[in-house]
Length: 264
Image (cartoon, rainbow, N blue to C red; front, side, top):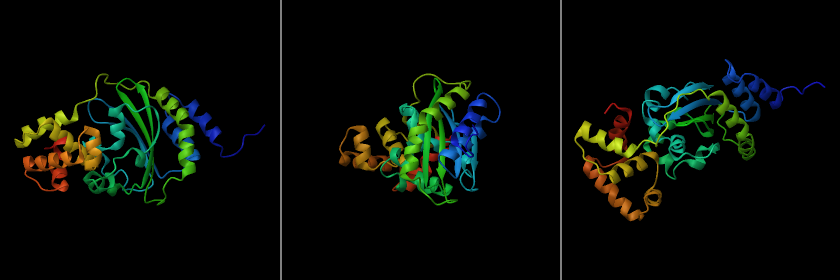
């Protein structure tokens, strides 16, 4: 019996044959594109210690990964919703960015100063765990190249093939070196960096609030995360800005991002 042309099953077979070999990433890309057309793809390995590693990336538009190395991998990844999934040890599966991003993500300085410049408009990430201390994010994006969001039917497709994608990823990248142990305490790192670089003494709570603001959480969302009232969060924010000698989120981003990237 002759196989049907351009079938996803045929490309899946090619991907399986490439497991553990050169060409697996391209075969996986082709399989995913047959199932779920996209404009760009990146495979990111997040570890508990150190910056993430881009294992594979390809984009139709030049802007998508233009600042990946200089900004994202240098430290801005600590503000990314997908990195937050790593810290939270989210179950393996498919996640749409807009479903996991904070409620004020599109008003955050991270979004306005970095994410918006990539021209990305929609993303679906497949999260997998090949070894202890490492999570993989196989992220499919739609950007200015097509100008299209993922349709509901495509979101359903992503959920349906997620067990296949994660199993393939975990098998192929099982040789990655992990960093087992507890997730890093980013607020504590920020507290120490602010003191060392600027002599600013932040409390643990102020550092937590700063990170949540930068990640795009509203006062209500921050309150829910910290278990306090939104009005209390506003007091924390006022105290944070006073301690840092600033008056806006843009200034907070400009102050904190270099600390996160180690260039403060």
